Image 1 (spheres, rainbow, N blue to C red):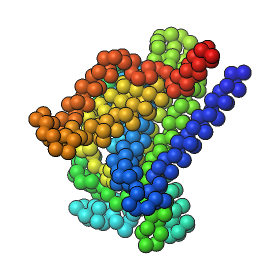
Image 2 (image 1 turned 180 degrees about the horizontal axis):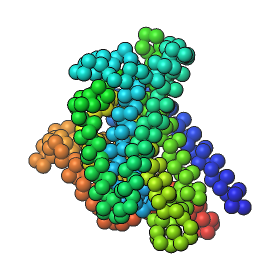
Image 3 (image 1 turned 90 degrees about the vertical axis):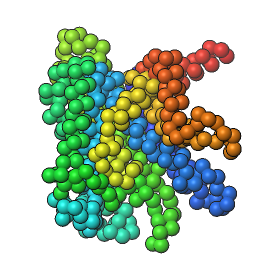
Image 4 (image 1 turned 135 degrees about the horizontal axis):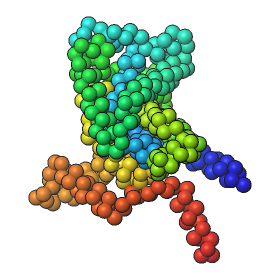
Length: 401
């Protein structure tokens, strides 16, 4: 009976994900099928809506990966920005076309890494038409996986001494790692690899996945669909891990390490597994963030980014994947879109408001976050998932009828 329920839940989740992805494609391409004058501003490709959706997809994976470690395993880490930086740079270094490397690394006379996966597959399948699409897809996929692997490898090396620490000490150690790695990647001696303090550009971004004609006319937009697809696959893998025997071991460690060890759980092994897995998906999200902002630059991956992701996890609910995803899109939409009008000195077209000025939206946003934290101590979802709420609602409706 339990197996039937789990299979039914998996099928329902799969259908929901497919519907979501189809809806994203439809929303992104609806302007292609409407007359130019009848397209609402919110549905235009340059609309803030699509920027929010893309950044939300990127940050949702980063938040869920942090929740895996902080919420489900009980390890308080603040190294998320550092792992995202590793992922972003690994992806960028491996993805810049060979023909563009001299221009990107002009200060250092060229790049020490003189190949890209896209060029390598392009020589096998061709660089135009279907062969070009295959080369792009395989090159980006392998670069993103390697981005996660590099982040996981660093996590393993760091975790050997750091995971012996607990609570605040672990947080301080991982925060220090993030700051050190940011400084190292801006070191001029590593310029032929990391381009020093300069940004790396000219690699495939989300817009590279739009299907176009030879003259550049867009036939099908997939720039929002791609980050949703990658995040959906990665979050689904994390959910499978959480619901496996490893996930149950993580939760046991979170609840009581002594009791977990008495039950035969290898604390060092499972902590390291959780730490490296979280870092892997943080690295993938870092690669997607580089694709979103169209460059990789170390100074962007600050402690503020880690605090943003941690705040999303707290708002959504520590120990809730659904909560992290929902809170991500709410956070990004509020901070990047819905409260933008508060930065203008005029309101409703011409009313002068004295206290409205650039940056005021962040003040209001901070107050909103304080209210949420005060009245939702365990976050919006607590430790529950969205299917749990839907089941509870259906039971209430059944009882009422």
